[in-house]
Structures are given as C-alpha cells and as structure tokens.
Amino acid sequence: MKAQHRHQLKQNQFAVVMARTMNAIAENRERVVIGLVAVALVAAVAAGYLYWRNRTENHASAAFGQAMAITQSPIVPAPTVPGATQAPGTYPTEQARADAALAAFREVIDQYPSTTAADGAQYHIASLLLALGRLPEAEAAFRESIDGAEGTVYGSVSQLGLAEAQIDQGKYDEGIRILNDLVGQRDGDLPVDAILMRLGRASQKAGRPQEARAFFRRVIDEFPQSRYLAEARQNQ
Image (cartoon, rainbow, N blue to C red):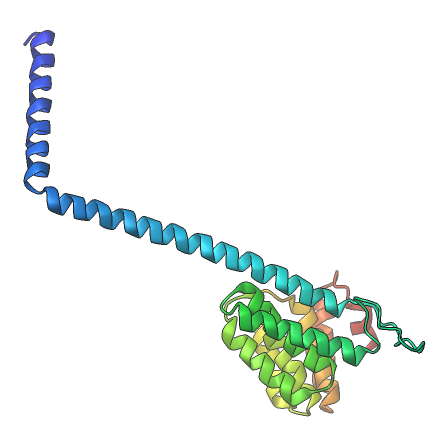
C-alpha cells in the first residue's frame, strides 16, 4: 500500500470517528451540558474551599502569633503616677500576662477551630496552666490537646505535658507509664534522651532511686553525645 493511500485512509478513519463523536454529542447534548456544568461546579467549589481554607489558616496563624507575643511581653510594674496607664504591650505581673495569653489562645480556638493554630493554642493553654500550678486544669487541657492533635507534634508534646501534670500531682504510676510509652516510640517526634531524663527525675520524686539510676544510666550508655550527659552522670 502506498504511503499516500495509507495517509488518506487514516484521515478517513479520523473523520469517521469525529463524525460519530459529534453525532453522539448532538444526540446527548443535554446530558453532556449537564455533565460539563457539574464538573465546573465541583471545580469551583473545590477552588473556593481551598481559598477559604488558606485564608482561614493565615488569619488563624496571625492570631496565634499575637497570642504567642503576649507570652513574651515584658513585665513592667504598674505606674504609680495618678492618671498614668500601663504601657502598651506590657503587663504589671506574670499572672496578668498569663491571664491575657490564656484569653488570646482561647480566642484562637473559638474563632478558628480545626486549624493548626487552634491545635497549638490548646497546647499552650495547657502549658500555661501547668506553669501556673493549676494542675488539674492543666491535666484536662493536655488531654483535650491530645484528642484534638493526635498524630501531630502537638499531640506528642501534649502527652509529655500530661505526664508532667500527673507527676506533679503525685500520680507517679500514670505519668511514668506515659513516659515509658513515649520512650518506646523511637521514630517519634520527641528526643528519647530527654524523655529518659524525665523518667529519671519522676522516679526520684516517686521515691524509686534504683529505677531512677537505671534511666540515667541509659542516657549515659545510649546517648554519649546527649546534652543531658553531665546531669545524668551526677545522678548516678
């Protein structure tokens, strides 16, 4: 078969296929149009959702940043001059600063739920409560953080915080159990040597010196480059 004839044959076949396709579209025009409209609507909704989600995350991150800034604000004694006011961005006491930060973090959660910023805000609320010595509240807040941020770094550090809150309340068995679980997660988000040190300190608080020494020894043997090495040796 000559090349020219083969080329003409392919053109004819293409023309037949196109004709059949156009006839099918013509016969099913309504269904085709509906299908195209549906696809366009789905694409528009998806694009709109992504835009909204990104916009929400950006606003949430900004609000979270403002809350974090409060935790670093300077402590300046309240003015004693009549009519004078507290300098903007400062707080008269650590308690006042903590209260303001707690309120700001809670606002992030209320305004931007189900965002990464909200997960971070919940963790920092729990951490602030722990630092303030409000241990039962801190324990509950860490549990809430774990539930809401499972599988993320906030979930991991919240487990650590929960253990600390329990140990500080004398719930040694519960806290040490959590820390032991975290040590077993070698591919987790938290450094194992740091958790071993916390286990050692917790065992000391619980009046278990032999167990404490065993944890400190693991730091020395398994992590010779650890920044906790000197402390671990002192506790041997």
